[in-house]
Length: 249
Figure 1 (spheres, rainbow, N blue to C red):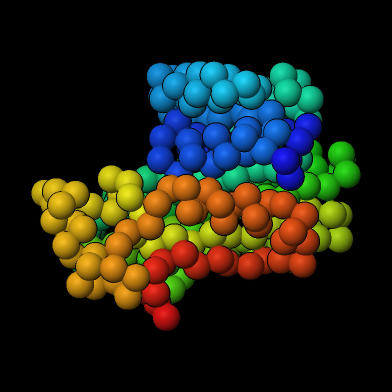
Figure 2 (figure 1 turned 180 degrees about the vertical axis):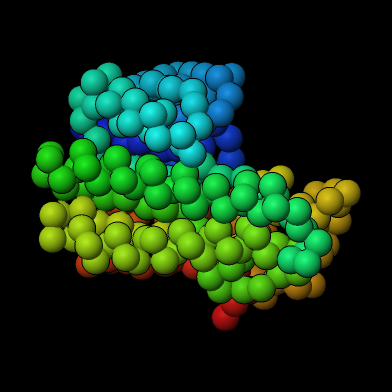
């Protein structure tokens, strides 16, 4: 129960890694706010937490819009009693080779970093006034650690998130706010599928391309997020925790 009586905000909390992390935080005693673009996935996350005896709330909106982020942090504090931990997980995938990208696609990809920056901006402001906290940002091996053809814009956004994480970490640790990032490789979510690929084809591809021989699970990423947010990781400041089955080793 590392997060007993703590309040946790998870963006992109309706599906995949975000939902897994929200459930894991709640399972360790946290009161959890989840946000995302669509109502129904968020309701399902809240329902699952409450069914297990936890406390959760949701707010639908876009973290790339500052008014929403401001309202999200305020709603978390008002409805759940504070804000101790934030997992900035919201994101999207934009594909295309660098020379073939259209400007709208490029701007959409970079908006991933904008959403993380806005989230940190308002989370930090609250935490500074309320005794500190912990923030974990979702990055990726793509961009900061590895180049994959067709992912240049996405990788640029994730590299920006890693850079923002490191700078914000050293800027704010003096106020008791620890900021770190997690960088997954292939995880068992739709993001890791090549277009037109079945899960069975993906499994075969992973057996021959990844040293560990499989994709990672959302639970494995959630476990790393909880560790980074916990007192056990108290000396981790500006870290970028890579979880990739040996892909970049």
